Image 1 (cartoon, rainbow, N blue to C red):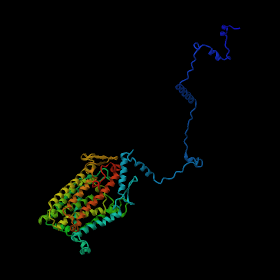
Image 2: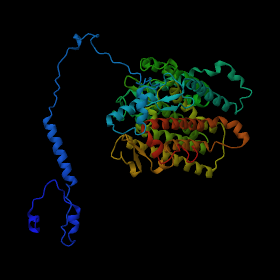
Image 3: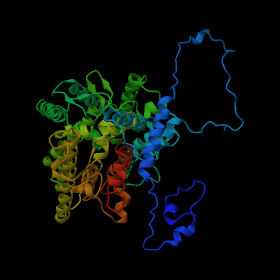
Image 4: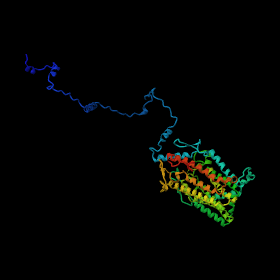
Length: 555
């Protein structure tokens, strides 16, 4: 029998488990509190995992890839493995639109993103080249980016044919109507014979004046002026308009000194007007044929498109610039005709209207010759081609300008000084508006000191670095210079125009004078707008201050 002491010292067998009764039998105060074993933290477990993975990677061997040079020419086609076409692989159809068009459509969202200045310049030049390309005419202007603009009416080959026949015909009818006092029904019998459309003296003097102008233009009377930097081909111009005017004045003074019959020229313009218009038309036809023969190898347009609409915007014959020569010819003849009218009026009874209106035309013509260098920034000099239609316009312009003067020569209109004051104000405003607009446009086009902000006006710089003026008159209309030109010619016609029905029957041919300028400049404003849309892109339609070309809120 074991005592209590021997029980305590007796070894406990490992197989005898400790009974719960022994623990529970002890008193709660003396019972030993057991704490659970603390587990490892999650961070320690993660470190252990990463160490184990790195150790396993060190033990694994890394495979090596050995490349060998193989001559492809030695391998036979039969030895090459053929790629099996899987039934699940989709069949891609060819896109109906070329890749270039798709890319251009994607770029239309941001056409100037990630492009250098050179790429923008080349893209703009390609678009502007395609603007004047009339080959395969389908009624739309095409750009290199796939954008299409509708062509303006009378700008295709058919329209040019109609205008080429219509312009001299309407001028001849207006001249005949002035002689018949506006009554063309029935048609005057005298002009039913072809002999009345030809006069040897009229043909001779018209040809002599054209030859004198050409000879003066051959003389290098001024230094060369470099063209705009954005021209496709660098050009140089000689703006000798005012010098030509001085030469022409000296020739007239010499003719007066040697008693040459200057009255013959006035008789041709005022009395033999129809043969004079016919002679100008035939000479224009000869000049256009010469230009066509010289420029026919340039471009790939059709015969009618080259001959009527022109193939080059600045054709030259040796040192002679044809466009500038014809421009000076029309202006100098206007000065000559009106000067002879004033001299003849001073000899006889003075007609105030005749002197004032002739003086207005002379002042306007001298202004154009004096600031001829402003043509450098004009759409006429830079973009319009020289064909039969444009040559006809320059040759017939002196006869059109002489229409209101011809009315005053045949009819004595009483002077209204209030009307004369209104005419003077409208004329001066139009002249100043045109000269100011042309001068500002010339300043920023030629990259002078005021190129970025001419005259402190508000401007918008486009993404391709071009500047658009949106302040001043340009905040109301896009072409204030065209509006100024129209106001000048409307002011000249006001003293002659009488709104009564009897007067309209006789004076309707005079309306051809302002209508010619209105139709021409409206047509040109639409054409320039389409050109600027190609050049400036998004800024022209969305960042411009106004949408109106000539008249605010109307057109």
